[in-house]
Length: 214
Image 1 (spheres, rainbow, N blue to C red):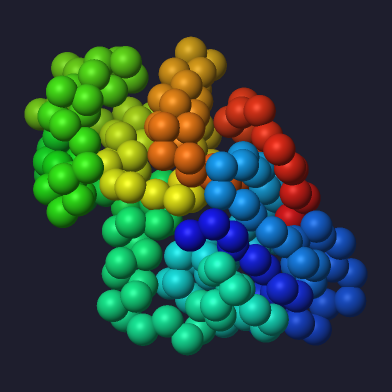
Image 2 (cartoon, rainbow, N blue to C red; image 1 turned 90 degrees about the horizontal axis):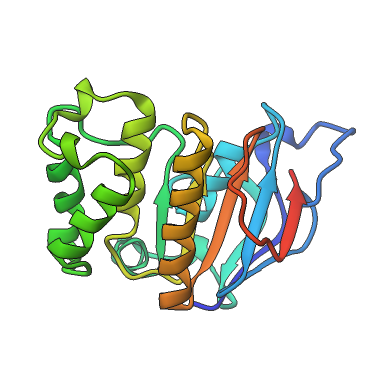
């Protein structure tokens, strides 16, 4: 996948609003593979909706979203399964980790489906992000910032044309934010992938090609 296009897209819940000022909603927006994008948002402007629309979890919007020119509302379940396995990898704001599993098990749950990363590479990321000693800890016993780092590693355990990271450093200190940035940037460049990052305050400090105000 090379192009994600939003064409006059708007959450249906916003359709009666007359004061929408946005670079995204009701505008043509293009995300190109290999480029880095920041979507800055205020609370209540539809950031979580945007993530869910692009990932195919929700379709309660007007306008169109197209992947390489094809309207995503036409995709069948099997197509979405393939897209989510090989084209779009997302780090959700709420992380969506399994609290009853360990950090390592949460990562391996995805990597065993894709066989994309070596155990040596995953171990290296755990070390770089300062959570190697938490590898066998239950996710439910870890801090939110530690869980964010686990969620990043899981996000990278698949091939992708686009990495979508939703407020990925909200609970991280500056040093861990920098390490996350370096790891994500390196993996994106390795795959020629684009990055779409969102923020309602603390933002991931990438060299963005375009910044949108949601």
